[in-house]
Length: 196
Image (cartoon, rainbow, N blue to C red; front, side):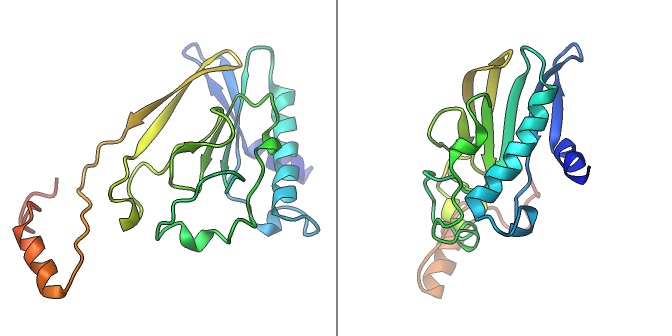
């Protein structure tokens, strides 16, 4: 009974403009080794947890409702962007999970964990990327959100919307005197400038 309650907690029904359920999302948090049987490796553990949760969501789907998944994980085949904020959480690919864990009937998979926006294996499995820079290594990277459009249970399109940068991220390198001079000569606002 405990496992069934857990699987229901990660299922989020989404309603349309008329208040009718249009999709079911399996919104899986980051999984740690204690979240799946100790006898399983990372990929097998993730597969087991997702399979149970997706099966429970499939039982709730009526005709025409999309089945979606969310995950905070490192998918096999995803490109890593070696940033300061990603390096500590990745261990050389040993935790990479195959996209096959989602099954063919999952219309869209929205992933987090890696900051580089990218599809993984197909357009229906995607990392949106972080919406703001999370390290200096991302200073020159364009951040975005994705909008997925569905026709019933079918993914129709995925559109990118660029997130405007509200605060400039600049990198100054060199000897202390050079950096202080570059900052003074830059167009950065003074400390007394309005917060916005």
